[in-house]
Image (cartoon, rainbow, N blue to C red):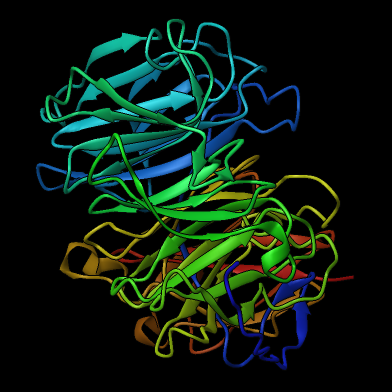
Length: 467
């Protein structure tokens, strides 16, 4: 049995924004663009239209890849203020039966799967000719009909699928394919136990250089080395009784140096766990981190580590970001609320996050509200025109009367618009912008988007109206 140390850290946070996090230390990301399709149906189970998000950078162009009940949406981010769907691939199964899709890309191909539907398939899509064309070059369900998640080990050309089965493959908690030929996957392993540690499912996993960090739902967590596919070596295991706040061990991501793993149980009221992996098979717990509130229905979903930050899509709490200056005790630093839904014992809000685009834009998928293109204020030259697009709004939250400041553009005419979170235009006026501009609105309690357009810049910010 593994050892673990308990060392809790306490955050002194105020709750200011509609049960969202907001302190002097926690900054709100800026909204750059939105995309959604009002005509798509929600799932029968959770009424979610959208699910996973992925990103691509192909031929000097950035794309968001968004899953829905209908299939896979390719959204061009050349103008990130106005994301545009340029290609669409219908799923093997579509409609209200679909809850979940998943994506990874490898060597010029996008791999797409679904977790529901008797006619679902593994789709391999040639993306090398973007922005001119895409081509579905593989669309079959003999190897993979449905799988909950996939992960590609880029260094070893291996595709891992969790909780999967095909029409010629029986159910497997974990199955691995050789994709050295990207359009001809070959099964090379199927697993349900690691050194007498039984695995009923691998819900999600992170793999680097043949070492897989596996989130095994109710069974806990396991790490194994797959250099020899016939005889994988178990490096560490954690049963659900081996760590505090255990629940449904859902997902996680490894730090860039491999020293820490950030592990989430998809269970209401539980925190993300910071695990020190440097002494495997012993795994040491170092910290609990959360979205900055004590709501009993706060719940994390998916995590990614990139550029010394930990990103998490956090359902009702939206996007939550921690800096990793001390990787053993992450510091809550950014957030963005993608939904105005009240916390409850359900699954709604932010599903996935993708922070790897070279521009620095962060992509978030919301189950009901679609794609959010966000900026943490650290963009590269690819998106220089967005660097100064935030607005200072005060007070925020407010009762409908507030001021906003744009010091760089005093004396310019600008269009001032207010949208609800569904994207509907509620207010529009043209006015001369001064040092401090005031608006008085009659709107119900909720989250809204303030958008300012001048002749050469677009600015956006969230506003929050209380009672």
